[in-house]
Length: 208
Image (cartoon, rainbow, N blue to C red):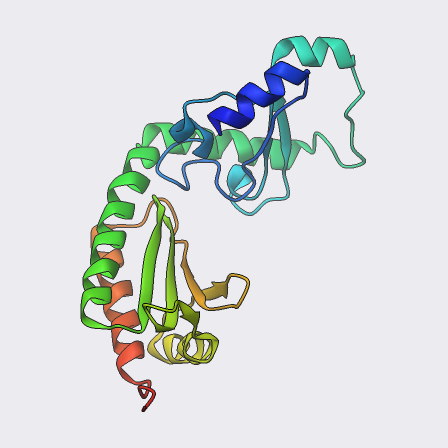
């Protein structure tokens, strides 16, 4: 990211950060780009910004806004007062309840618990992520990294049977995504991982 920032600066290119999923405390920071030690020119924000209400925003340096002029980046439904009020309430709640710090702390607990599970189950090839945005990758063999899509998709259903709702992602759909709410508790993290482990135990292992 620092190299990209330098490249943009050298060539007069605006660096745009897509924080639609990663922003608003999701990664244990208010913005994911903070971990990279850079500041983008434009930040795209939505989804968690109004906690379910339809709201998106483009955040830029003041100099860019002044260059573009008033109304240059308008939208058909921009400025909805109800959604904007929801956005203000979300920002206030995050600050008052310390939810950025909570996301970082609970994310560390989640990742640690999932790594402990990986140590006992070689179907898990990797656990990665930041804050409360964690992926669990399933492989047929840790050496070859051959993706195990079948186990991952079967696990989705098994988790639902246990009362845990998760989604998969990745090029081969072999990664389970953990995206708990940023006000999740330690107890809820532990319960979620226990349900995940229970669901995984119901799946048969491949035979040689």
